[in-house]
Image (cartoon, rainbow, N blue to C red; front, side):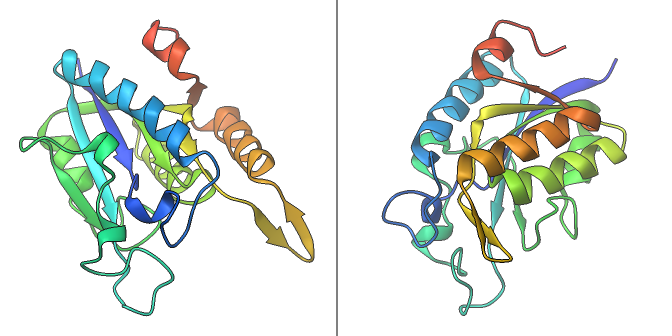
Length: 185
C-alpha cells in the first residue's frame, strides 16, 4: 500500500502583511496549515515543503535570497523534512519533487498553501494527472483579488471558483476540521 505525504506550497514571507505580495487571509490559512502540519508530523508522515523563488531580482516578489522568499515561521521545516525549490507554478516542473515522493512510495498527497489560483491549482492538477490521490485543505490555502478585462474579482470568489474546479475533477477538497476528523475520503 502506498503512503501519504503533506505538501506545503509557498507559505512564504512575501505573502504576509508587510510582504511584497500580500494575500487575503494569509495568516488564517497559515494557522490552519500549521494544524495540518502538526497532525502529519504526529502520524509520522512525510512532509515536503515547496518554496518558490523567481530567477531574477526584477521579480515582483520571492526574489532570490530575499527574506520574503523564506518559508514563513508558522510552518518552518524540521531538519529532516525536504524543501523543494521551484521557479515555476507547477511544483513538479524542473524540481526533484516527484523523485522525493517516489523514494518514499507516496501515492496520496494533501496540499496546503498559496496561491489557490496558481501554485495550488498547478500542483493539484499535475499530481492528479500523475496518478496521486490528492486532497486540498481549502481553508489552509490563500489567494488575492484578481482583475480581468476590467472586472475585479474578490479573493474569496477567486478561491471559491478554484476550489470548486479542483473538487469537480482533481481532488477531494475539505476543511481543516473535516480533514483532521478523517473526513477527507
